Length: 255
Image (tube, rainbow, N blue to C red; front, top):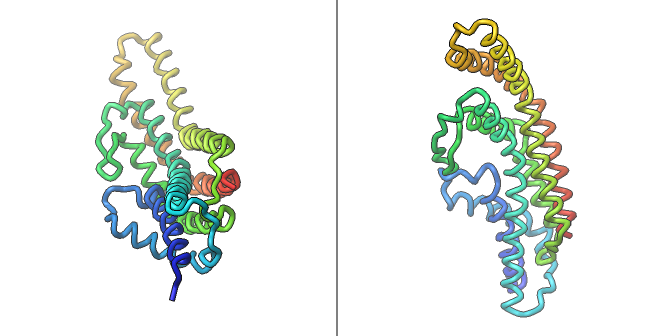
């Protein structure tokens, strides 16, 4: 028969797992039922409890101290889940760069799954990234990162210091680097295309460069994007290796 301390520990474990799942990239979409998210987090908490639930954390302050510990666990889970989502958002940002250069940024539409404005290629690359995330066992990496967080940062022992903010900023900078790595081939070719059209407008003023250039940039951009997507698996593999490093560094900053 579990005692009160074990129940209290399980609730703290469940809070961190639930916050991590809600903020993670796979369950942040609006179409997934909330009961499924909570049920999946409950299963993770049950699996983790035998490893970390037997040791009761020292929480001074009675009910008020336990409330602060619960808020701390929610914050840790949200932070870890958001970092995973942030890394995967690099593919969406890369798509927005490409859309801006091709001219698709004018066709932004509302994404009902994420409740935000999204352009065509940005949404396409994000969905490709999510699929590669599953194919390359990124979801296993997420779960292992959550389990490791319980081992390295005990319940109610997280320290929100400046090192956490510094690591978060580094992760944000890494996300922009990932976006540029994905979009760089397309942007480079489109820049050459713009220069060529500029020279063409000088040598042959009779050609309507605006209309011609719009069609040429779409065709060239989509052709190069096809090559990028075919090789995106190798790029995303390096992204997921970086994700593992970012998670470990963030967990260490919370210690």
